Length: 423
Ligand code: NI
Image (cartoon, rainbow, N blue to C red):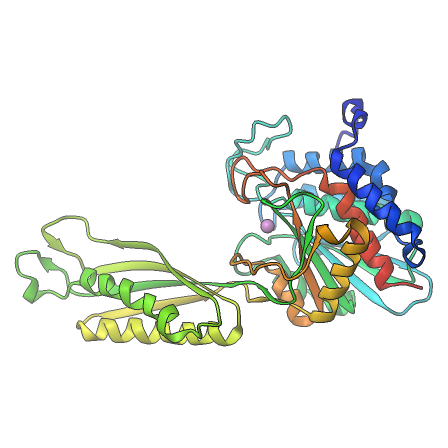
């Protein structure tokens, strides 16, 4: 929380900011975009945003326990004049600001939770909470949205209603914060014509925005399979039913789903992540257990994969005289960006940072994201933002959000809101 002015940081404005400043200032000179936010407009908030981001980074909180983070967020927003609602879907916070008499409304979402990882970044603001870490940059997503909140509140260059949605528990895979906020009446209590969100993306330069219309991120399901045979002596296999033989055969058979059942124009993954059975070489065990990760990019492929897995596992076990328990757990659904909103979001990025840093038709991502639930109910776009070319991967113990993105990201959300709610 300490907002000490570190003059070391302000001595050298990062290179990326001077590049982007040139781009958006020169674009701003060309008439119609003039009144909308540029990167230059948010530069003076860099130090404040960096302090907030590092403060959150140092105090990571896991899913549905984002108490300190939510309070920090809510108090900042109240200070800037927002109407703040706490406790939406657990520890979620929604901040509302109205300007003018416009009837349109927009939602922007940031996730706030950390991961159960022991941080090894060696940074001066590394996690002080043992075994918890902001290794996915949600500290940065939250701060970028706070930066936009600050800018929107001080300029109010929009005509309508903006809802800033600070979501808990994105990382838990099923029953996460998006579902909780929706079942808590998010869109009934805070109506949004469209919804937008972003995630940082290591491997691409900071200040770069990536877009893809249609299916963008995968649905991710987990299957827990237990094969039940009949245990016995290794020397008398004819008096047993060997579950390891069934499991071994099933490992190969499950690979036939992507190869033979999924349309070659579609993309899908079946990964057998665990296989456990037995405890001694001279014993045939009673059972074998497998955990399988299933990823897909369409509801049809997802449904057909579930049905094929159930058929193959059941008939395989039966064929060998065994039985199988199948626990099919549906995780987050396919994330589908709507066409018009994705093109709009790309245009805003192009205006802000230039065409080289606004990449359309970015490749699909096999990771999953519970922002998909919001997009099932409202049109919108989930954006990826480069976190630096040579940065550690997401969920790595050395990961850190790139602070060069704070002001650029804040300017992006501000301009997107201003353009969407243009007078
Ligand atoms: Ni994440």
